[in-house]
Length: 485
Image (cartoon, rainbow, N blue to C red):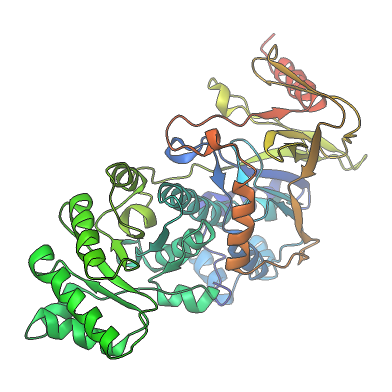
């Protein structure tokens, strides 16, 4: 992405609004936009933030090429003064964001843009495209990894992804979420993550017989010898031939460092249990039993509950497409406009008949509150920038809708951490993105701060996202001021 100019990866109305600001408003008026989502995908108890590195690359490359301006001129929609402005366009604002790999919850600003209104408006579409996609796939992959209960999960979805970018960046997100490797070689090269794979049925079918195919593969890849056993007959042919090859390798003194079988069809629970018996009886109790075939967290959980002896999972279509929850639902909303005379931000609010669509106004930040004893998350607190807290004092939390629901945290029983970090300052990137495998390690630490009840796949416990008293009162006053008299 860092070699691609994605400036025109935007909705037309972003550009027409920009032109409207250019001619009818102060184009340098500073505003705040928040990018957030309203509901956890898949009914999950949380989401995993992902995609920030690609947002940074997008912002750093944000400019209109000569051919971009010519194309916009050809539409007949834009004036020459505006097109001239676009020819020298650069992002000069500030961006704050929650780091990749962080567990996040609905209504929290994942990204906050503080910039002249034209700049802040332009970046909306691409920013949402990047954050929505990778956060969605990271969350889906996290569910699958959780269902595997410590077994390795490999991302195998490239051929079923909705295009090359979805395959590459979906695999990146899956690695952040805990997958041990991906079949996507370009992703491996771009992000320095492990690449893994076995062979296809066509490999077996291209040889005179299955045994020859297995022997040849074992000769080529003795330290990564996972044999696909269901091309013809899994129990009568595939597994016996695999065992024969493993015996020959052992006899020849070839170390069996990473070896086993893969099941890609049939009754995976039954076949894996039968395979385990056969492998154990032959003295190969440490052999990997891998499975693929339209897996997801629900099927993996079912197979685990049935006593399947599978200990490695290759997951493709349902992961890379987040098949049962295909969109993240992130939105980008105006939160404040700077008053020129005072330099202070005037809060803005969007009303709706749907309570969940009413926005939180103002220049905000987020504090995560942990139990000092367990180090688990108690709640998240959205507050206004500049509010301060003292952990040696008591802290009152309350539900911003059902305000009678309150929790009083005693002094010394909790700790607080501010989540957003500054990514851009006056148009210059001031943040260094960690490597994917480092983000993956951080994501595991983040999961350790969640209660088990929040991580369960069905009816998870909700982590509350509360508003500070000051922010709640600001929102209440704005709502009341907007009511029809």
